[in-house]
Image (tube, rainbow, N blue to C red; front, side, top):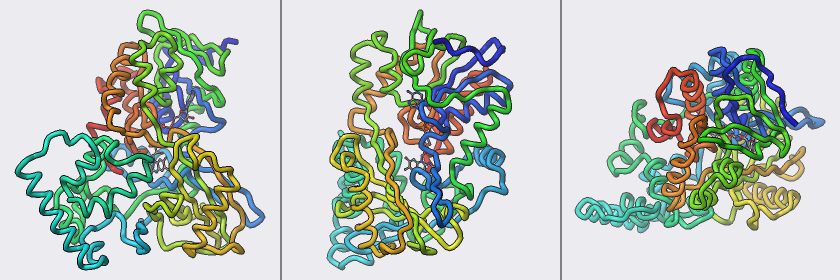
Length: 481
Ligand SMILES: Cc1cc2nc3c(=O)[nH]c(=O)nc-3n(C[C@H](O)[C@H](O)[C@H](O)COP(=O)(O)OP(=O)(O)OC[C@H]3O[C@@H](n4cnc5c(N)ncnc54)[C@H](O)[C@@H]3O)c2cc1C
């Protein structure tokens, strides 16, 4: 079957994936009056930034795929967000987040100084001693071979602070020992890398220009009816401007001739040939697999070694006004199956019916592992009993619940990922009419703002307005995480 061209314009871009990256690229091309078509595997747009709604006899409840707060340092992207969503639909919210460790709640981001004050004196003394030991050892020896997360953090914080604040959460989130995780992850995510800035940021108001300040920001923006609104509005703009979004279209094969993609096959038998440029935002291993034998064996092997962490969401709709005092809470210890719990009503005022609230728990896992293999009722039961033990709600207050599984939620930066991604990118860069964009599509830990920037920049590049290489954005721009 051949999918007929929906456009008469001579140059057409096919975008694979209708997450924020694909949609923002399509939006920019539409704004520039260029022809674009988006093909999406799911039956709706938004990718990881989706919101699902449940109708109950007590009203409608909305849940993001894990609460999605919007914040950015990029003025143009903030303006884009407001223009697309509409300022009348956006709320500015105060964030309150904590972490539960050894039975006590601490403010998050952790302020090590104030956290240590809540701990027994001997731990505080030991943390101080191991910090200074690590500090001088690092200062004088600048140890070589610091290639993993554990060494990177221990060298800067000492072993006690590492064990207290980093080990459990990192291991649980990524499902691997921190020594098997690349130090690149630590250097890009942990902004507070010297003692004096820890103290400064524990005590003083954050400097709005500093990299550290972003994670400490108390405020964020959120569309009152969930993050899906951003995708829906972009999709509407694209379609209003005579471009197209096809859902339930899974890319299954790409054909290449003389370093150009010439044919695309969706759902095994639907062929598309009328395009000039291809933009991919889908997982890199999936993209590589669609190219079949065109890909050299070493690149195929490298691609299969690029792993993504999967996610299970378990949500509860509740007949009570408030379940926690926080926007979200982290749970680093193994006694809880989830790593984070958030309360959607603390993000947007229209996420629950008046007088009701809800809770969503995020369980990081790998497809096929022990957690993933639990049935939905088993997962709901387990999460429910753990949340009830934490006194967030009682059984009588539950209106309804659900369980949802999400693939490719986070790229995993294991110790060999740089080598693997470079090999794969270098092969893909030979395909002259292909661009990669987004968090999932470029294998970078990008938040929504940089994903939007990626998509928009790629749209401009396709239009010939920019020389930027879209795969570079994450490492050149500041992380907001
Ligand atoms: C739990 C969680 C919480 C988060 N919270 C925040 C937050 O608070 N703030 C923030 O800024 N960011 C947050 N993020 C990050 C944010 O979700 C991502 O940055 C963004 O959604 C990534 O968009 P993308 O388009 O790059 O990728 P994706 O959303 O993954 O889009 C890729 C699309 O490709 C489609 N696809 C895959 N395979 C195929 C195929 N074969 N054929 C066709 N289509 C295919 C997928 O269905 C998907 O729609 C969070 C992420 C997670 C997982």
